[in-house]
Length: 288
Image (cartoon, rainbow, N blue to C red; front, side):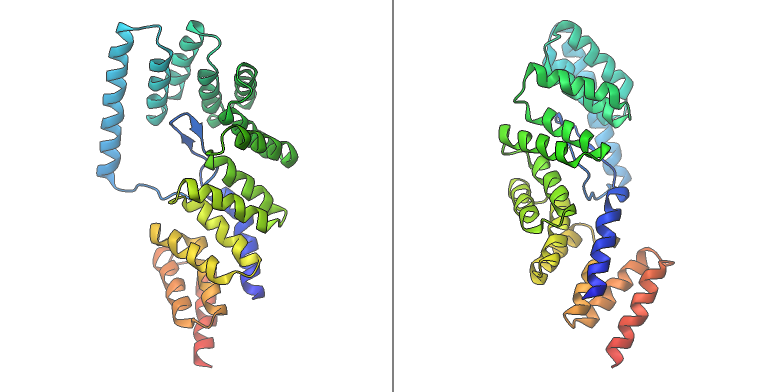
């Protein structure tokens, strides 16, 4: 039992450094989440071609209507998908010349600045967006990300509360607030937020993973195992989830299942010292 708790603690500290923070290109930035990288070259090429075609189509439409803020927003979104951030910002600058009161353009430009590490300009845009529309949930969420980055959990939670107050369908805000509550071992409250996030987005692998951690901490082992199974069904080689599930299997006496998980880890990372040690220990347990 102590071994599992130690494993959960380690993973909770390290998970944020493992996965990238990704922008949700519909105009709502995401929090850090457990992602399954698309490693199929064909899929990547098809997505690139689709995005290129979308950009061409939007540019054509802009020639006919250069005052359309919606078209500038769509174009900027597609340019971000292509990682053409400078061009995306230029188009949002143009949109804001046409309409300085576009809180949507300000928020999206802030998200791009944030992604590029230009936090001063990002916060300036988020604040201006909220001045124009104080009830804009996505901007409150982005402010929460910034305060969390600075280590100001109190302000981050305040902004997340505002984000949820103005849009109770903002599953990113629920997930992020759950993670912050989890840091303070408020696991029951964290689980409630993860529940909301998952109910709004059932395949939210990140929320499932973090909910599993809180389930374990309050002793709901079977619930933790169920969430981890769903996570690993989505990504069978998610190392952190495999370690935790293996430890849970071992605590439940399911030694063969634990051995299988350690072997999967070593199949992916042949030189994983920790997996080698745990596999030896687990095989010895089996021999007892």
